[in-house]
Amino acid sequence: MKKRENNGYVNKNIDAYRSIVGDEAIDELFIIAEKLKNRSIQNINSTSFGGGVVEILSRMVPLMQDLGMNVWWDVIKADARFFEITKRIHNALHGVDVVLTRHDLNYFVEVNYYNAESIKRWADIVFIHDPQPIAIIKKKKRKLKNKWAWRCHVDFSHPKSEVWLFLKKFIEKYDASVFSSPSFSHRLKIRQVLIWPSIDPLSDKNKELSPKFVDSVLDKFNIDKDKPIITQVSRFDYLKDPLGVIRAYKLVKKYVDCQLVLAGGGAADDPEGKKVLEEVKNEAADDKGIFILHLPPNSHLEINALQRASTVILQKSLREGFGLTVAEALWKEKPVIASAVGGIPLQISHKYSGILTYTVEGTAYWIKQLIHEPEYARWLGKRGHLHVKNNFLITRHIQDYLLLFLSLYNSEDIVYL
Image (cartoon, rainbow, N blue to C red; front, top):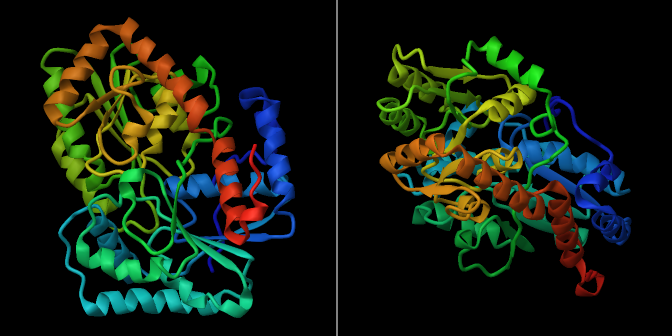
């Protein structure tokens, strides 16, 4: 197991959310957590920085601990070959044609088994996140009497059949599986649970910022605050379609003098990032209105400021597990235009809390509309903020997980509130 890296400011006080979600919501969390006081919970994933899974775990684990629970988080140890293989598995789950040999899959399992043997401490509930560590389930033994759940954070709606069948044999050894959207579920012998991911409203990426700080970030990157700013925050990944974003921007710029910000970084388990970044730079060429910002993992305040300074925020994914950058932007009352894929339609009701699109041309059309209709853009942002507050905050997410953990042992343990 690798040591986790620092992920910036993390609020560890669950009571701090009372002013946002109310006393009743927080009191309910303490009631449920009390029922789990004799159960330990272990999270396992593939990386300690970069991506939504890390952001969720780095904030959720301390808050669960503040509820009085025995919770910890481990990260598997693997080499570049393993992550190159798991990237292909990831792409295949999103429907992309890839080549995975028997040697590749055998190595994937071998690394998982190595990590399974390396873990010295096992909890009553083992919560595995995503495909990378899925085969660690081999360590599950009846005599330990612990329970295992597998959490899928990726878009599972149209996986390549060979990869799906390979993973299915591991998934069905778990006691339960968790998906982010009904469209991701498949026929399985085990129980399937729907739990939406969430954002932390008190994190550096989402908390309120002063106008002075926001302006300082724009100055830092030489972005003109007096021109419309179109922004997409995401990893440099083909499935986030940064090249399509640039093409949409170029269509808009024929009619509107605007700027494009592509801000993001990479993840330790994503070896394609550098290649995609170079292609994005080539597509941008010498357009001085395009700002390609490859940011360090802890640039949460900068991302927050860029979102708050934006006129329109995009998430033009080709495939998407959930796309929490959408919820982050909506929380800041920003108008969002996003692809109708994965979990994004759960966050956006078209023309009510945001805009859903399918093409580069459609994206460009709505960018122009929202720039020219600022009152409507503001109305969309306010509706989006309310939707996020009601559905996609970390306190709701924690409650869903606690109820899942209770249900793994005995239906009599479930508390109905």
